[in-house]
Image (cartoon, rainbow over all chains, first blue to last red):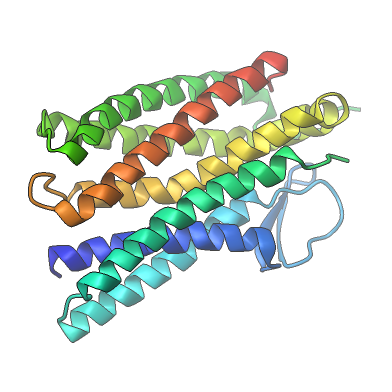
Length: 117
Length: 158
């Protein structure tokens, strides 16, 4: 795979990772939940009641979706033996960088105003 | 009756290890960003050293992340649930920002490490902006996380 395509795959990974992390904040997706008092795991969209942690699941979902997307793009680029057009490469770079900034700021802002109950 | 959570007895030593690894990460990341930002205006110095910093960052980020993930259940119950939520809800929120930023940073770090293996700063102009962006973003995350982590631990540690 050419160097440019290698870059595109890595940039897509960044975009999908940050994007899917953000989506797990907005959309109910099946996550792996950990219950620290019971020391057990549960995979669910709506987990059982009790003290639970969804962070491990969010990281896992983001890793899996970004890896899958990056592998698919890598396979496509290898199969087509082409490079992404320059305009598309630039668009991908811009999307990845803006999504990362947005995700970080969105999380900071929404959690700053959260009422813990 | 006391409630047991995962690795509860190892909470303090693991927290100290987590902090030491984070300090190593902060140092290597800061040195890295000081070398890469000048790439944007064509100053290419110590290229080999910059690559070494990336390897140190990759190892220290992974270890800091892993140790943090191990002590997280202990924090979640004994610190957040039993203390922060009732007395310092802002601290619970600050920790959650830190935790999510670290989670996002993991993805950035993986891509950053992969890119560093290919990028030649003097010739790969297209990638330079993304590469420097990742370096700056990771540095901001690491500085924020270390300062907020120390602050929270000063209020109540595991």
